[in-house]
Every structure is written in C-alpha cells, then in structure tokens.
Image (cartoon, rainbow, N blue to C red; front, top):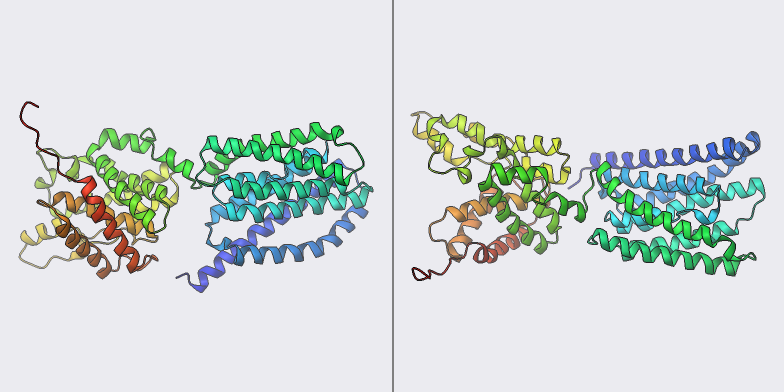
Length: 470
C-alpha cells in the first residue's frame, strides 16, 4: 500500500507540474500581448494580474479535482509530465494561430493525442483545462481590444464536443491506421460543428471562415498523427502500438536474442504465451505482459552458453566453482536492466528484468557447493541480488518463468504433477516474501496457477507417433 510519505511526494510533484504549466501559459500569453499585439503594458499587465487571482483559484480547484477524483496520482511522473506538455503545447499553438484567425485553432488537439496514448479518461479533463486556458486568454484579449468574444465561444463549444468524441471513439487498442480514420471523421465533425454554431451565434456568413475551419481540422489531424508517436518516444510511454513494435522480432534486443541465444528466445516465447493468458485473466494488460516476458531474460546475451537452454553437449559450469557459476547466473538480471536502459526500453518492462527472480535461491549451485565442502554454506551467497516484484506483472512473469522451465524439466508431466509443481513454486515464493512489495492477491495467484495448467496442454502436448516412412 502507498505510504503517506509517497502520497505527499506525488502530490507535491503534481503541484509543481501544474504551477509550471500555469507559468508556461502566463509567459506565452504575455509575450503575445506585449510584443505582438502591442497592448499598453500597464493596462494589460494590471488587468491580467487582477483576473489571474480568480483564475488561480480555479486552477487550484481543478488540480484537486484532477488529482483525487480522476486519480492522476496513479500516473507515473513521466505520464503526468507528458500530459502537462501536451496541454501547454496545444495552448501555445492555439494562442498564436489565433493571430491569423480564431477559427484556425486546433482546439481539441490535446484530447486527440492523449486518447491515442491510452489516457482516455484524462483526455477529457485535459481538453477541458486547455479550453479554460485558451478562453481565459482570448477573453482578456477581447476586453483589452474590444473584439467580439462570440467566435471564441464557438471554438470552445466545438473543442469540448470534439474533444469528448476523441476520448470516447479513440481507444488505446486502436492501431495507427484506425487512429487515422477515426481522427479524420472527428475532424470533419469539427468543421460541421463550427459551421453550425457560427450560423446560429454569429451574424457573419460562415463561408468567409470556412477555409480557416478546414485548416483547423487539417492541423488537428496532422499534429495528432505526428505528435502521438513523438510524445510516446520522448517521454518513453507505453501504448499498445509501442508494445507491438517492441515485441517485433526485428526490434534490436529481440533480434539479438533470436540470433545469439535461440534457446533463451524460445523460452521467452513460451513464457510470453503463459504471461499473456494469465494477465488477461487477472485484468492486466496482456500486451504489456507479453513484452515483459520477451525482455525478462535479455541479460543472458552477455553469456548465452552459460544457460542450459542454449547449451548442446558441453556445460561450462562443470569446469568452474559453484560460486562463480552463481555470479554468472544472477548477473543476467542486472545485465538485462543495463541493456534495456541502453536501448531505451520503458521502465515498466525493463524493471521486470531485475525483479523476475527477486531474491530467490539458486538451488543447483547451492547444493553443488554443499557437496564440495564439509562446512556450512551460506545460502545468501547463492541468492539472486535483484529486487522483489513491485508490480503484478513482475510477479506474474516470475511465476510463468519458473513454471515454464520446471515443466520442461519434468519427466512425463501430467495435469496433477503440474498442479503440485505450481503450488510448490508459488508457496516457496510466498514463504520467501517475494510478493510482499506488490499488490497481487491470493485469488489472482490461484487464477495464474489454473491458467498455466490449462495452457500447459496446448504448449507442451505430445505429438502423435507417425508410422515410419509416412
């Protein structure tokens, strides 16, 4: 459970980010008012500060709503920072394109990007917050210049409507192509909405501004396509589209695993099959589970022949001391984390490399060491030096990894034998406190065990013996 100190820390981070966002908004607005619009400095400054007092009270209330009701505190700092960046960027581009025409602003760009990044519930609120910022700035501009505020209201209503459609229609499971089609439809809808609202609220003919409305839709569409994968990479975010790319056999580390450690590669595929099914059954992201399983053993690339699945007849451990063997074996977790960081693999995946063995004992070399000495062998010298699982997926991969290896090593496994084996594996890890730092429940552990038993028949079934020559 999250401690009070951690809650205070995450709240403090959220406050800092929102203060930073507010300062960003004020800075770009003042730059436009003072240096581009050439509004009288004293009058503009005093008016801006006066209205800002009430505005900051609104921001504080929205921040608390966002943090507690929408559970922004559950997001990682990089995800919170990405949302702040997208809101700030959308506001800035809208404010400066409004110099050409209010109708050209890509008013729901924020929602379009966040929905594609899998933040659907956050997209609606972030889009609303962006609307507040833009309307606030242009309202001040109207007060200072005497221009009509009605076009701004037209764009605000259109932005709220199309932003809501974006958060509903675009799901995190959408492919890039589906995102294109849905975004195009929403952009066309925005043109119709702006046209209808301008006819109802404004005296002027919307035909005069139709080209700007079309440009607004085009900018929303183009920036949505370009910025979604760009923000994804800059902030190293997890989306299902990104996970598909990471688990492609052409991705650098997976390609190396296939060529340099084919046994480990096949083991990872089998673990991924287990992990994907287990994750789906306990309500976790199966795509992320598969990616974690693909990368959990990439550290074996440092010494592939020292791992059983990559050996033929010769085992190099036969010629070295058990403590050296233990060092080589456990180094694959820290080496895996290093490789993942070098290749910019998201931490949700990379941390599983250091957590999938936790602090478990390496029994083979521990017992080998006991046979070579008459004294007592300290088991601490034969344990993994990693971290215990911090997430359900890390715990799930730990179970699937040890289960796959143990089932393959069994002599004539059947359902009952596999069931007893899995119960023992899970009990051993519970007894050694491997699941103390994650929120996995006993019910979920039971579901994982049952899922692996059911999957066992499909992955390790026996082939029929065909008659010779046929």
